[in-house]
Length: 398
Image (tube, rainbow, N blue to C red; front, side, top):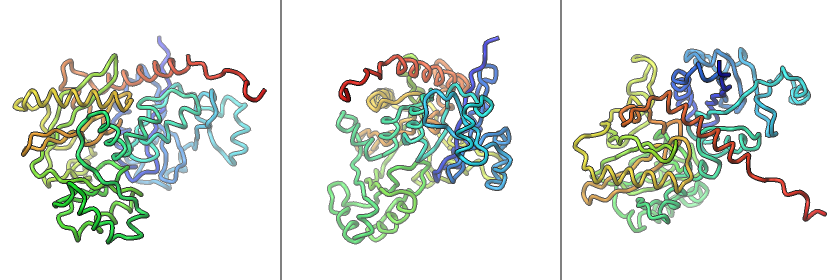
């Protein structure tokens, strides 16, 4: 019998999207092939401490956090190459470090599968730790994760590569604090921003947290203040009044592949956190299915074929230009008044896995197979990087 790979599914984290990460991780663990993989759940609590234990596999466990964390084993990943897994913590960090000499203090891990939403998980931070520890991991590398997490940098990077994007104004929190009246006045005189409504959103968050559709100039300050509760940078964008959103998922298994496209449907005109995650997942209606529960039209038969092909073409190009790996969902906007197509944003795994799109694709790909392919790609990438010569010996210090 083939030895099962030891996979650490790591989730939670220090982000306002913490609970969405938990939901995504539990979905993934249910889908992963238990005959191929020995899963170790690793939960990062809101205070940044790491834990593992079978209790993490039960949704009901999280209702007792933080008190219930005492039932778990605290662990950490050292930024030291070739430790081979997670270090169990007990007592002081010094005593835990001394325990490295003991095999029983290490939980062996072959590969990390990060399932984060938001900062400290999608933005390159955790990927940097995996690199320092010399551990294989799924998804994009450090620079790709950092760029795609920052909506403004992502847009500007794609713009210089001739991917069409809507105008965007980045507003720093410290500048707004110094002169909010001056900032709001400046916004409204910039080309493309003289007419309302406008959208104000966090630059580094997802899940529609902190997003406001601003109808008048006097509402700008409040919308910026809302963003600055969660992020140090706000993004102001023009509102396309006659809008259609089209999303596509791209993966890089044996070359770039595209799923079918989808048209998400909003009841309010802007997809809110509640519409994305609570519409069919509140306490009364059972466990949230995350983005899969959103009202959407998948592979719409009446969508113009040229438009669909253009979305897929731009999606593949953007995925490649940004250096993404694994799976990503790319969101586009169509201005129905002009027919113009714009890249809107990229959603990195896990929110982007969009397994519901791949199920409808040809050939049909189930979530379990998507996970297999991401792991296979990650191991190939790790092997390629490991083959590089990183030691040329001491020369300048001689």
